[in-house]
Length: 416
Image (cartoon, rainbow, N blue to C red; front, side, top):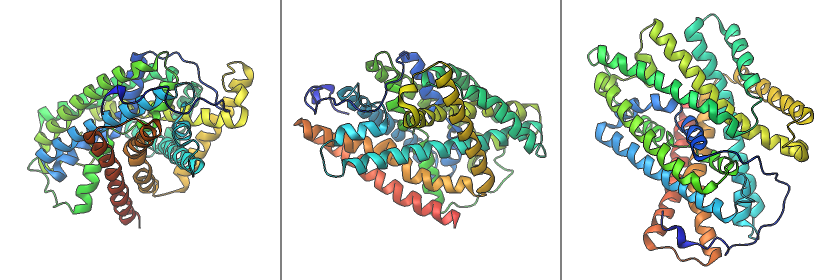
């Protein structure tokens, strides 16, 4: 997205100390690769074959590739914005404060960004808990719900004591292997049987086609975690390398898996590709691997949410790795997990409700805010952007408006 020299790092407003506390900076670029892969490659990869079935092979592949370009461009914008405030832009909300400082409504913008980010992350934690339990039920049996919740809590709570994204990054390596196992099992099923003639697919409605296309676009979403990830790097300049390597690998995985599964099952491919697996050991292996992968996604969100709460409750103890800090963190993570379990139990249409939250938050965090903040930062720095770059940035903002509007309408129609 333009040239790195478009803005002078020293040309914006100077750094002003504030209450945020920088986390330990220990991550190398390969740690970031593990984090990005675990965050970006979620359960959405299993929905991409359905996208091809809904919008067509050529259009589906084009949407996946365009989403890759958008995701990389957005990530590079955030990377360049972080370079302007490396000591202050520790979170997405802090970035909003840095860029909008001194402007009318700057506090409101920061509050909106932080609220969207943290509500989305907490909602994802609840959804991830639900998905973990659902996966475990596939392994243990549908009548073992209580046992599945107990196992999930017994495994997640100790792991949730990992307080940094750097710490979770090593679990992210295992997460990568887990999702590779899931895809290997599903792709293996594609080579042994085809269901083209076993089901008749209904003609999708425009809303269904939009939802399927949006799933492909958001399959590269994850920018809400980028600022916190860069804040933990030894050298945030290496984030660009990690982003390009990881995004390129994910693009190849998405194209290979989605096209292969669509070729095997045609227009009758299910919304979740794991549904093509018959009951038996293979399905249980895939379900167990998916449970682990989703658990790592939970841990990533937990690290971000937990630190934000820790800073509010005890900023001086946020980097305390002794008894005081550990006890506070245990209380935060225990309360968060209990609240997630309560949300899952009390809201019967949680997936649909989170569809509304996702429609409201994912596009702005992924595309709209990075583009808008870059436009504002450039103007305040007096840096001239090329016509193509300006057009691309405003196109990202316009795409965000379209995705939010149609996403809210589609999810509201399904919920109500």
